[in-house]
Length: 289
Image 1 (cartoon, rainbow, N blue to C red):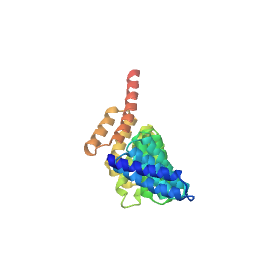
Image 2: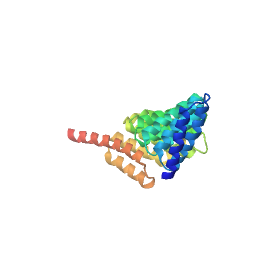
Image 3: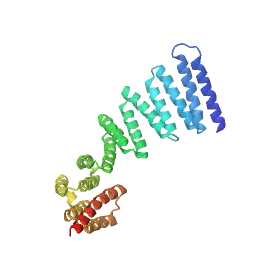
Image 4: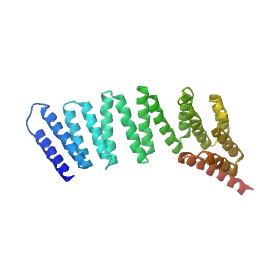
């Protein structure tokens, strides 16, 4: 590996020398770009990711000097992917530079891809607000290119994090809209009950029993088959226990559903929020009596 890194350093030095020398306008930058590219490849072979990332940035700058924006964008993206292994902040910064250039030259499909990748990096850092911002940008770009399946994947991520951040109405609107779209698609119909369950759980988090009841009626109108599902029964039982302020009934409904269909961490977290509010109300009433 040290041999590969040494070769990389040699090519990088040659590139620097080329840039400092004389040459016809543009030609020295093109020559240096070839050398930087070789240097970066050797650094990658030597697994020296920071050095590879730094050289890709220099390569991008050479391409910008000769107005090759597409190549510059690719070089910034390559830099980002090298830094991904060592430095998350630097990775995001370089991918944002790639994104900016792809947007500038109208490569919207590539732009959407990098918006999604940046969102995923923010997810890993648990920066949910930033992740949502970039997923939102990706949605606009995917929809502009009519890649609706990818747009909806990003929208589901936005809904997931909106609910975690207690932006329940935003999450509800997304889940209901995607359920509506799926009803008209034979391949996606099977997912409707899941989207409506997620929307219903968000309704429960809002704590308005009338709104929950209205939502369940709306979901029955949207999809008459929903009434016969375990998801509907769970939501109806939870709504009733919320209305009656009955913590035990609430817990039993969840246990019964979970014994057949395991609830994921997201649903469990949100339902625990509802249960805590319910327990607090029950304790208040006990104090009064």
